[in-house]
Image (tube, rainbow, N blue to C red; front, side):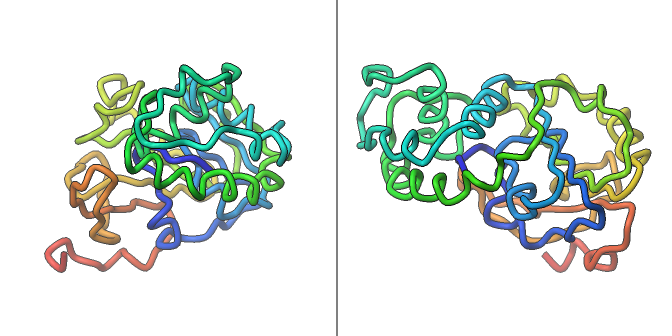
Length: 231
């Protein structure tokens, strides 16, 4: 529903479907996996208060709240618009077009994305009304049986996030992922070494950097026998 650095919007279909009735995203971001399987029991958790504030605001929004937001044009400073705190947060992420922090000056890409932002958001509002959305750390979550879609700041590249990879002990995170009850799906790229990741797809991100997205799961996937050399 909103653009965010590391979003899986272009590749979400490559990940295995959930095997359980509950989906938990402990590094929620823009929660594209949860949106794909929105009718499940969904729990979003993120340490970044901006992300959680945006999700909670969207959850209580009406279609009219979204359609009444101002149109964005390149060069606009959204701080000069008559916006509430949460409207400003939502548009500051939207006009950043894949940024990890709020951006207040609308870029050319931000203007382009804004053309479909409101209609796409309105189309998805009904999907999130029943979701649980919490501010917090993955470490504090009870280990319940569910599909865990785990998309943390990457070992190489996670510095772009407000809560960067410098705050993550990847050895500890590895054991935490392996210990999940239910289905664990962990996202990374092939540079990472903290789990035996398998390549999924070569991908050009918002920042125009090319990486090979990778996966680890405690269930068999279609990528178990794929070799990195094929990419």
